[in-house]
Length: 338
View (tube, rainbow, N blue to C red):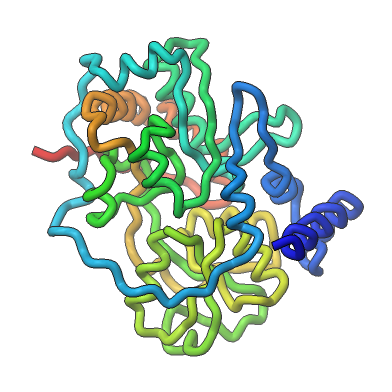
């Protein structure tokens, strides 16, 4: 582990000395460095020591396929919106701040602004909208950065109030946590270096190493694929970027939205093949906090309203449009259980 941490420190030092050159021979930009240098900031964000140790060394696993949850419709996972205050909302108000689980290693979605050192990105904008609605215009947020593998446990133990971390709604996860209505739609795709022989998610992956985030839905997708590829699991897709740049893996399997952010940071990488599935992002919450789930759904109703001037569209245009292109259909429509 010490060797892995030392390697990461040397990579950071070289990036500081040559900010326009990757330490492993590929381009890297400042947001990557800022993500690697995430530190604790008072009343603004909290990083997780366990996450740093977990990201120091990737684990290579061939885990069993998890049992599937009963049939469900992820698009209609949450209850209808309501602003009736309940115990979960009152708990946040008594505390005086919202505690949000996020990812501060995802360029465009959640990372630190290099000038202000404040968390910023598409998911961060949504967190701040939730906080303002519950706590008022001067709301304070405590951001807790965590790897995908810790999201559900942190939520179940109420270490965080909400998780807004490019987390897809699945039938399996719905047995463990609650979700809001869908706020973004994407799908998995492969990211490879220029010149890679990998052309798509097919038999050409046999014997190759594919990097993915531990605890992510990509792990289940790869295990079920029958491609014969080996999963290399790390704490986050940013660690997968380092693995790919050092030629320790052949490709990264992640959501196309996250892969596009990595490609924006390293122009020697490219997406290959079509999107493999549909992933629906939702705000994750504790299953017992029904009033908070309803409140977040009400907040999302307002967040989507306004067409080209809606908060959702404004945030998309700022963070995602330059990489993903325009979103002519706007945010996904809301649907509810019952």
